Image 1: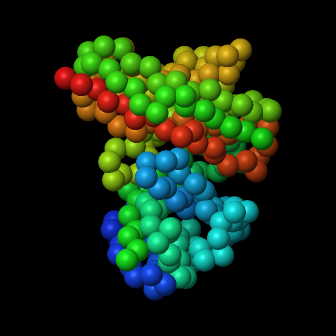
Image 2: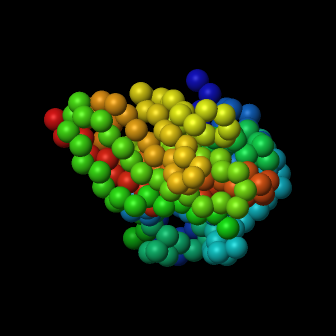
Length: 115
Length: 115
């Protein structure tokens, strides 16, 4: 089945120790997104890629960066995690957001714990 | 600017009874509206969407939603609730008049279906 895969599902890191979360998709979608979700709140968009064009939201901290080496993979790097970065990180894809009506497909998420 | 509101943090319903989860939105252009469901420690799962056409939209697992332009609402409904429907539900909107807009999510409504 075509899907969005996130690894690992659970990640524990120490305060200030860099961490990388990964996402892969078999849907061949143009757009990939990273969201941060805290305590069952609404997901907060951090970045999105349209093909290789990178777009970060204005309020995304510099501590967060992303890479998309090819269509299938996207990475979220947290350079110096703080306690406030503990959250669920969701990766999503969509076929083409310019058309507007394309729904997003979400991975299962990675729950990050910062000690 | 676009926004979406889910006025109820939690909705309680008995199994077998009809359920409604409320959503209202605000956009300057034509709205693209979506409902997603999230089970514990999982990503968001697409349920249904309204782009254009019939105001009553049918989606997965017996859910449906009615687009009401005059009331700027897109309430999620199901004729007969199941205990397995208990989850967190998110309404989302995108302004179809702006190709660069991302999805805006509501704050979520927790649905509790009791046997």
